[in-house]
Length: 263
Length: 286
Ligand SMILES: Nc1ncnc2c1ncn2[C@@H]1O[C@H](COP(=O)(O)OP(=O)(O)O)[C@@H](O)[C@H]1O
Ligand SMILES: [Mg+2]
Image (cartoon, rainbow over all chains, first blue to last red; front, top):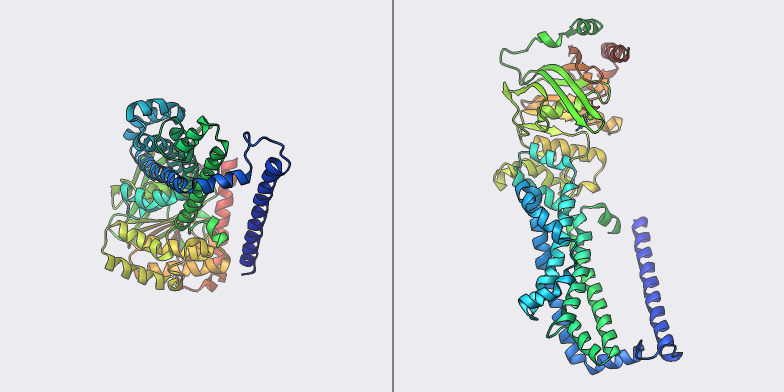
């Protein structure tokens, strides 16, 4: 009990420290840009200017932010679900692995961003191509994470399941899948951040809405305060999404040591 | 054969010993488990390792046979062969006179390491085998209830293994293996990591289980007292590659009282087995 109380206290202290450092960064930003005027407002707009912009465009910006968030969620959910599924099927069937592995290994080192011109050519500047691109990134991350995670499942669990009368497919559902979840969390977090990055890149290069689109339009008129605002919104969205992912995955890993400690 | 006889000759009075080749079988039916000239060689990056060398062993139906031997001699390998996780390089491993095709629910395994599924609760772990075999939900839950009370873990049914002590986890492991009503239990130093008291309790729990139901047990241990306490027979193995060095039938009173471990007969027998083991090791070192 006392240890738990200690952990809770420590968590609270950590939160306070994080909050203080955020405040300090904000103050520094204000001092450098506005109070001391060390950088021109064009190169780095101050907080006041950004806040004014936010109030100015508040109607559309919420809309743009939601569009981007929606596309990222769609890419992440579809891409990583398919990635885990394909990773599992590849681990389960050697033949599938032999077929798919060379293609995936050949495609994997190619940064999806380099494919954007093709995607625009093929799918236009609508949402479909952008979701496909970010989804592809998530897919690649999760296929590889899943295959590696399956390799790391202790053999003893599979052996135990087999001696308990389980068939191979049943073992994949009831042993392999739950056993890899803790290892997949790292992959999911990487994939989620990647999805934000790819989505913004895709929106920058050709889109009709979204935060990336907004940044691109602002760039044309050197409207740096809107660009900075767009960056701040993306950062907050990504942090929020990571938080949600954390809350969701914690439910899946109640049985592990990492969560037993924190409760 | 000669060396084998000599090893057997050191075994005390009050025990009947049989050489591996001419084992007397209790009943006329074929043995439950039989190893015929089984060798197992592992290919490793440092060359091949021979873990078993033309080993012969018979285990009769409802018999408890304990395997003892120096660590690394090939006991786990032997057990894994019977479990069907490994296949022999040479010879045959028979269960009910049929070659072992692979792992199966009729041969339950309790592993040396912790193998309780950490992502399932106690009750879910116990239900795993019956569910995997496709029993109805009603049957599964009645099996789980019975096992929970058998191993005294009813209060912990919704706990995750992480929240249990080592001894409790081993009880879950044992109960889970037993949930399928296997004909054979293969146990690899199952109580090796437990403290003395818990170990004794587990030994008695196992013997109770064995007395109630038809069960053939092959039990690996490095603890000679444990082997003598629970075994009908104690098979001593040579250092790697393992062969059967001595095969001792235990003719002691089969009481479920751990105090009998301190009796003179028991201790004399223990000393004899110790001597066989060390003599063995000396011979192989020579
Ligand atoms: N999968 C394996 N690959 C290579 N060598 C192995 C493997 N399993 C066991 N061995 C070797 O076989 C020998 C016997 O091992 P094991 O049966 O585990 O011994 P024991 O259980 O009697 O301690 C050891 O020398 C061990 O290193
Ligand atoms: Mg072993």
